Image (cartoon, rainbow, N blue to C red):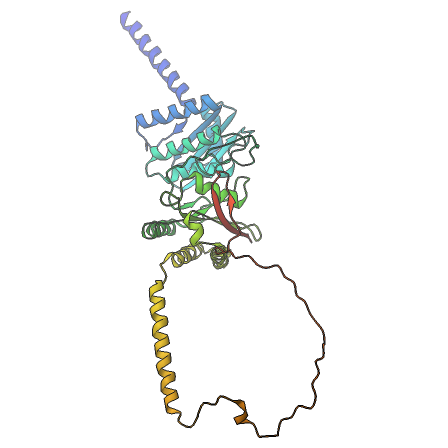
Length: 405
């Protein structure tokens, strides 16, 4: 009898354990069937996601899979929503390691918080971290930032950019350290090997010239203008070298003819080196390559022009020396030529060259024909040759140029 009671107790315990496991499974936020994460990492990530849902009401589910069970990745993401949460508002993100693609499913979100720009920000935060744990933590941090921002805040990545804010709203910009690379390909248009080479080149330029030159692609500006998106991306993600955040950043959004957009923003000493004429020249040089979708040549052209502008020019002392040498050589040559010409004697009066009595003036009259007056406004002197200075949503000064083509 005792054995039967014990067996029943064991069976009940197992059933309860299975029920609890099933309950935990349905409230799971991170799904990792390939065991890329340790138990402790899974525990921390699930706790973080649970805290976000408790505060915001949004369930954020992340799936790392290698097999989608015969479904498309989009279908898998939607199925995961119904399997893992009963929250009305949710974002499900799926990383298919076999196909090396990312897909997502959004439920609810009547506030429109998770725009394509924010989703891309979350994806980038995950993708730029070397570990799964760090990447998913970054993914949740970017989502949390978007959820905590006011309705008129639309930060590209992990920022708090204020756009369309009421006049009474005042924000104080807080400088942050840059954690993203100098090349951020949110639109997924740059091959991985090219992206790595561009990052290395940008790092070299920053180290050699003390100036950060960055590249960003985006498939959507999240309702912002190209100018505002570029400025906010620069400011709120900590771009720029040194105390003054010196640098230049180009943002490119691919699209059909007439829908492509490019914007170059500068800050600090970047505005001095890369003034309006230089920026517009860079854009003109890049256009044909961007239209042809030859992004390797387009962005290397951008970096070529940046380096040309940053390379130190000929020192003034050498310009003086060269001018002096040229003057001396010129005097020696002309002096030698003059010394050889013995048949010419300098004359002080023109009468030597005229025949006496051959030139007589018999009458003179001034005739007033017509007058023409041309009035134009006087141009003011502007050493920078730049009329594009503006204030970004952070309150900082930027210069910029762009085009839509």
